[in-house]
Amino acid sequence: MTSVTLRVVETPAELRQGLSGAGRVGLVPTMGYLHEGHAALIRRARAECDAVVVSVFVNPRQFGANEDLGRYPRDLERDLHVAGEAGADLLFHPDVETMYPPGYASTVSVGGVSEPLEGTSRPGHFDGVATVVLKLFNLVQPHQAYFGEKDWQQLAVVRRMVRDLNVPVEIVGVPTVREASGLALSSRNAYLTPEQRGRAVILSRALRAVQEAAAAGGRDTASLRQAGLNVLTQDPEVDLDYLTVVDGDMHERGRVENDPMTRVLVAARMFGVRLIDNLPLWPEGDPA
Ligand SMILES: Nc1ncnc2c1ncn2[C@@H]1O[C@H](COP(=O)(O)OP(=O)(O)OP(=O)(O)O)[C@@H](O)[C@H]1O
Ligand SMILES: CC(C)(CO)[C@@H](O)C(=O)[O-]
Ligand code: BAL
Image (cartoon, rainbow, N blue to C red; front, side, top):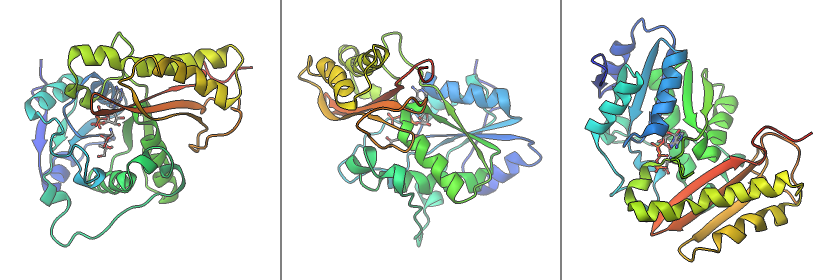
């Protein structure tokens, strides 16, 4: 049943009013078309905070000129239902003019962790993400903010920004929610037919193959990567952008360290849709 207490607010003034005297506030930033992955973030916020704000804003500043801003899936009714069920109190749904009024001229740019991988493939993407996330932090002033591990590099960029700019918020990372097949839930999965989603499971299979190679003792990054490539090359539909093993700073090294932050990341285009996924190299933490 959808929560009867969920309120939609569209302006900063309505948001502040809705949060007055709220106690501990949790924020879940999203671009909408909510699914069970988003619901996991909202439920976690519900369990840890007195008031939960979900923002739904398809942020134009994080899309490149040739990306899918125009066709990004939107469905506010669905979002209300999912957010209400998961226990949100406020759904902040500003329009583009509210977030970026005429004369708007500021950008937040995080260096280092934002530069490789998604940063290389999607120039300007993380500037757009950091800018809107900092604006949301300033508007909502949450005690805690919840982000999915599915967007692992984004999580690293947000953590870096918060540390560097002394933003008074605690960042909480939430594990990736998957279909039973292993496919990571993503709003962009809506672009795929059920048959295509079945084929896209190959990405998580490749990540698991890399995990298995590490569990078997592999420490050399090139051979770990090859274990994943052996899977990905089984389907010619996979147009690989990157498959890599990185440390917590998003650096690829020749040999992997025994560090729980070591992660295997993949990005590929399948059926014209760009998909990303990642897993910890050692699911149970670093090996002895
Ligand atoms: N499967 C998932 N499990 C856990 N968190 C997720 C999952 N999918 C998305 N999230 C998180 O939800 C937040 C909002 O993400 P967003 O609205 O972009 O959804 P998305 O499904 O990642 O969409 P996209 O298709 O654009 O990647 C982000 O912090 C993201 O990491
Ligand atoms: C964090 C975010 C909501 C900023 O627009 C977006 O990048 C997303 O949905 O992951
Ligand atoms: N979940 C990441 C948002 C994006 O791809 O723009």
